Length: 339
Ligand SMILES: Nc1nc2c(ncn2[C@@H]2O[C@H](COP(=O)(O)OP(=O)(O)OP(=O)(O)O)[C@@H](O)[C@H]2O)c(=O)[nH]1
Ligand SMILES: [Mg+2]
Image (cartoon, rainbow, N blue to C red):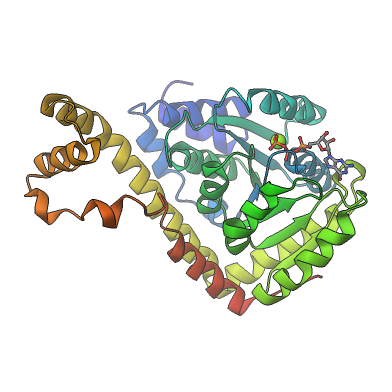
């Protein structure tokens, strides 16, 4: 299985090794990746639902993902899971735990699982994970689930990869939930209160009910460890995905996501040149000024033509507002609140 044509044939034949090989070629920037990526313009990829699962560490994302796999397998579906690992030493153990949980499906060839590292790159997740998701879809996986380990930026990145995103919350996580509410509640399509068996679950449901209603988001209560609420969660995702497909929202989001992926690749491509320009300019005493001068040099433009640092420096790395607008637009046409 050496040529791109062989690998593509293998993916179409649902060979898990071909799927793994294709993802590795994209991840490693292999020249053969281009031909494989071109093959992903396919009706099977368009038809599959890409479901993002995000939320703070310990909320139960992996347990829920395991249950969703079981649910979809019982329906005879083939499932892909891309588990995103921010590669931090802190979360290393968590990912290992996830792998152990996925082992329940390890011998099932209709469950394709791949862990991907963001390698500490800011916004670097999309670059290869987007391709991984589409490769799995081409191999007949539907849905493809993208699950993050609950750490910072990756939680937002996952929104850019998915057709729809479930934000998993749980009682007793404290400050994390507050942080979640600030940003991710705006971006998520489905709010999940997991650990519904916890004594404080009712309070979190009461807190989230008006939040979901105001924003027209679905709200689902689950007990992942017991499989409760899983069918409702899956049905909600299916209904939302169908509505998004019918309204053209899915196509809009995929276009947006492709653009975000292209931005990531552009930054990756520029990185060595930026590093060289900064190195040759010398360290300087203000790293921000050094960055600006190096970039101006690289672009062959006067530095006055670049945005000022006060404009650029404190903007979020991902421009969130277009995503929020797009999510709002989607919910305008398909608000399904199961509170
Ligand atoms: N009581 C209870 N415990 C749960 C439930 N769901 C998950 N847990 C437990 O919560 C812990 C964390 O679950 P995970 O599925 O690893 O959570 P996660 O969100 O994937 O965590 P990270 O990968 O670290 O971000 C585990 O010990 C689970 O068994 C639930 O519904 N009720
Ligand atoms: Mg996990």
